[in-house]
Length: 170
Image 1 (spheres, rainbow, N blue to C red):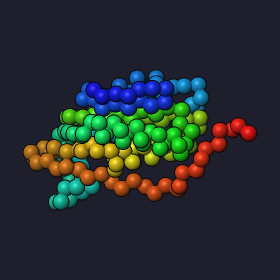
Image 2: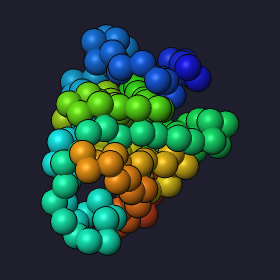
Image 3: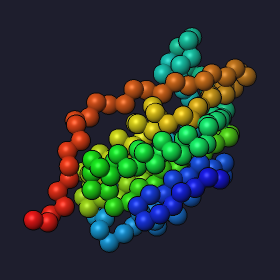
Image 4: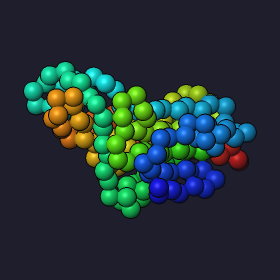
């Protein structure tokens, strides 16, 4: 496991199942009125969006993930900092599994704690969309028929330019 944990960020790459309770406990701080938690789960059925050139709906038996760990950790830290520059993030968790992830298990956990829910939703959406596109973690889908395919990420949504946040001090 690779991990960076401090007062505002908890970033992990691990092969073991993700501990949702530990993430929730970390995110629960007095300044956070909104905690948004996203789990990306291995689903059994996949369709054309998986990058399969046949476009067929297929049964997935597992996913596997690989990455260049130092680069992925650095990019995840950069994403957490970008979210904190855009929204009033109290704490953030960016966790991703490596290796095999069976059907119905989580491969990624994004958690954001902010003063209000709208900011938590927005920051969490930004983090998962950007992580899937920019962090060098590669996903391979393994089908019931024995075939495999590398899955390409989607383009992240367009966001307005970053504006400096007010600290509330005069």
